[in-house]
Length: 306
Image (cartoon, rainbow, N blue to C red; front, side, top):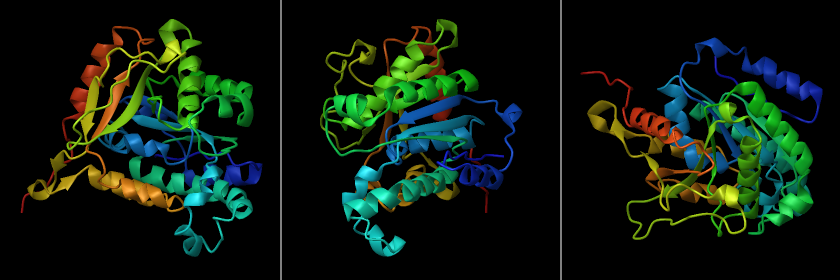
């Protein structure tokens, strides 16, 4: 039975989450084991369709490690104020309540895409910015985050780690989370390392795709190719008369993040979930990824005949 473990700051709430979730049947997992490492609740939407496919059709397991509480998103909570009955765009109110709200939103979203465990590391989400040094040097307790990442990776024996590609124009927190994930995997014994893939989104209408080699000054972010090596098409059709697509699941998942009004603008905003192969991975991992994405292209959901 799928479940979500939620690390609230009090033991009582933690136990409530575990009891509500039910037992784990790890021996039933036969597909890929994946850890998604991101900075904020809602960053996982970049891989929502792929996560759904892995958990629902490949009998895999996907956990999430979310470094911050996302309270820095209070400026985008205007529409959520009446929904939650709180003046969330007032900084003090937003910062006090959004950690609780956004954690619950992510658990709701996780139920849709099949998330197994969610590890909340409860670091401060200070503000939006492009500088990765701000969270790494100021807002986050990096030593503690490193310790937790090591524990999570060592205990769960993942095949893959997904994180956001650290492009120059992405949130500093996104870059920081990816850097910590890459370094955590690098510090593992070579024969125990999962394959780390970086995520971007793509659309059919794009005239120029993302070109990336590495984030300046960070050799660990170097990728194998300047364009994504693997792609999942969210518009793959299935069901009665092929009228359904995985974009529907992504939209359901995005809709759960109600406190972040701008997230809703990403519904139907892209067609592809693109995955970049970091050069720090072993070369033989490419064949393993190729096999995974070939399996992801095959829809196993059966439609009835009428």
